[in-house]
Length: 188
Image (cartoon, rainbow, N blue to C red; front, side, top):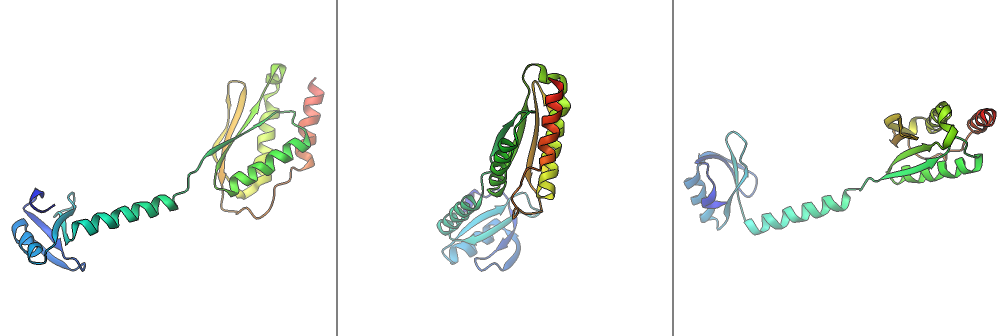
């Protein structure tokens, strides 16, 4: 600002936004002092650097207002986690899918985790099939942020809101439930 600007040549813009052209720092400071304003360097990396003639206190106030508006409009995206079992019951799955729908509607991302216990680890395909059916159930309303992946004794997938909107509610299809229940019952 003012005498602290290191550049000798700069593109100067007045308070109304009109370009005054490339000039030396001293000439720009003279114009700023005649108008009782400050010379503020806006873009030091530009070629030539850009400086603006305006009231510094008003400039700082407007910048803080812009930051407050940006903070207010910024939406925090959280990663919500939903746990499932490869042998989940129909009602439990529908409940979790409704909850996932609410999270997606609020703009959050969801981490589905299918947890395996004991001998269930021998049939990882049940977990991958369950996740695949869930993704198909949501259709184009979701985007898979991270593909299904085995992590220890769990299979995880991260999904986010897609382009298809969220007007419809997700209902677990009986085929999703019957396939997982039949397979897990047959493996016992």
